[in-house]
Image (cartoon, rainbow, N blue to C red):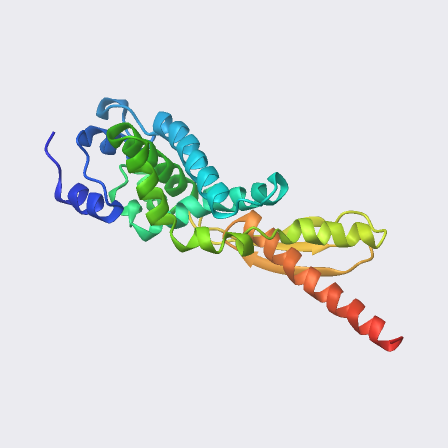
Length: 236
């Protein structure tokens, strides 16, 4: 199979030249494409998710031999979630080579987080099938790069921390309310409010509900902790 110039450039960006370039084409083909073009990337996405999980599990165990399962789990989740896969996809400009149907192309599919994350997992699987685990591991560790080193900070979950704080104060778990959604379908912006049962509230906006909820939880946690620190200082 003859490679297009775009495919050759993309192979350079991910650091793997395919012995079977059809695997790369399959990995980059979204389900919105006509069945006549061949298989889409859904099966490879399924496999790539597992390959990524294995490589990240090994990397985390190697990096911190004393860490417990409870410490490793949030770090693992921080590295393999869809947002991170999409972010990595953007660094290699994967969207530019995605093969999309007309409807997805017109709705901005090349920039959609879900499509980019799924395709990145499919590319991982394609490299695994084409070159074996070592080739896939080398690509993953290279592309994830600094994210692995700073994973402990990234793994901090503001929503969990806020819930634990609320329960320690005898309150109900916080709730999250979508206040607004703006922007086009391919690039929505969500405004979320995090609320405690005592009436405390903070708002945040982001490109996904999850990110907005986390940002709102972080803002509210900082606010209530600062308030309680101020109250305690009155009695010091």
